[in-house]
Length: 160
Image (cartoon, rainbow, N blue to C red; front, side, top):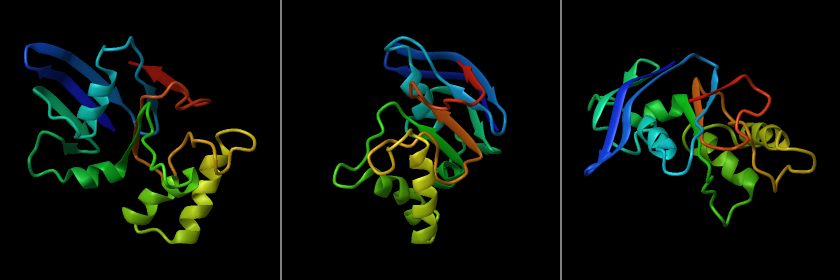
């Protein structure tokens, strides 16, 4: 579960996020949409702890992101986010990029990670195993947010 309450983010005098409230239930897929420059990426970056917040609160699976005692790396293991620009490692095949987090973070078995990655990559469309971009995370996430035009395709979606 994700609870965002009265989230504010400022970059100097520029007030990018103004009093954002959002409650996302477990297994719910949410797409953040809006015009360029409206704060979509900043919102996701704040929710992933990549950007500090000015005020308000973000709670992901009972972890408060504004609490200095929160281990953000543990939170990231429980919540998946897909950004518009996937930032894959260019020297790796897509399948190897997809396997990277389960292998390095979750310490998954290589054969198991490859099997899950192939299933996820196969959901990108016919003939897109190694070359296509997967549309679902390889490991189950308790929470997921997306900044992608096709994320959550076929799922119950909500827009913020």
